[in-house]
Length: 329
Ligand SMILES: O=C(O)CCC(=O)C(=O)O
Image (cartoon, rainbow, N blue to C red; front, side):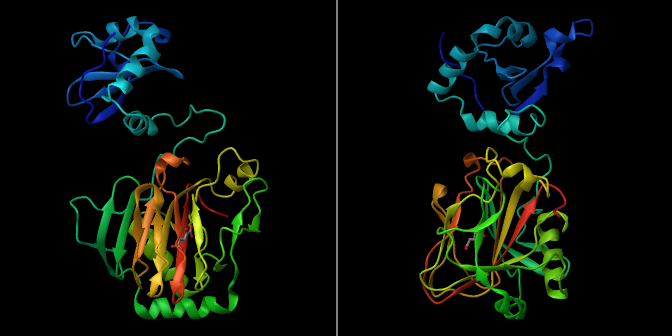
């Protein structure tokens, strides 16, 4: 069997049911079709949990052809991957929004709605009600946007001052117990405000909510982090590990983390950038700026491995918001 030679642009998933004639039995016609809208080629017919791949679909009756190919799945898929004409990312992208209920036991379904700034038409500025935020950089994979002018100098200074007396050695969530614990990978100090704890925190939370179009309630409290020279937060994912024994208890209080906003409260003289090692990307810690990134699936494929680089000179203050699927309690 030769490699698939179609093009793989604009994949979509359409229900196989919609291609079937009315009198066809549902059992035969259930499934989904991964379909290239530009070329009208079928990429992968999918039935239940099994993937079925197609080489040369007949444009006149793709359904018939697909049903006849059900046993060739892996061979065809391997051939397509080997030929480089389809990538696992294409499949993942198209399926992400469709397999919300069917998933392996160790996985969670992808989030249907996601926090996302309104950047259609590539605006230079975003109006967040009480402030005009600048768009500095927008990246698709990982989904990440760097903003300028998100906080005023006064807001940054006030936030540092009210957080300072409450700073303690930062902890991370222990994936097995779901509890917070000291972790050598995270040597900075941190504290959490309760949601809407004071007028400044409430204003920043409202601004984050308007920026990424996500309700204030679907987020953890605002966290302030302080790094002295020589401290860092080693690369990690913000989502909760789906297979860990402590995760169900954590998810019961607001679902998965699906997005992060890091706000920079001071200028760091040297070091201290927020790094994304998988994509060789680093956000400079500049006062008033912010970086947003999101991860619809709790998987390394989200490319959201990130960390706070070691502060080499000066100190670093940031505030972070972890966005959750549901209301966080
Ligand atoms: O310190 C930073 O720049 C990143 C902070 C971070 O990784 C986090 O809070 O999850």
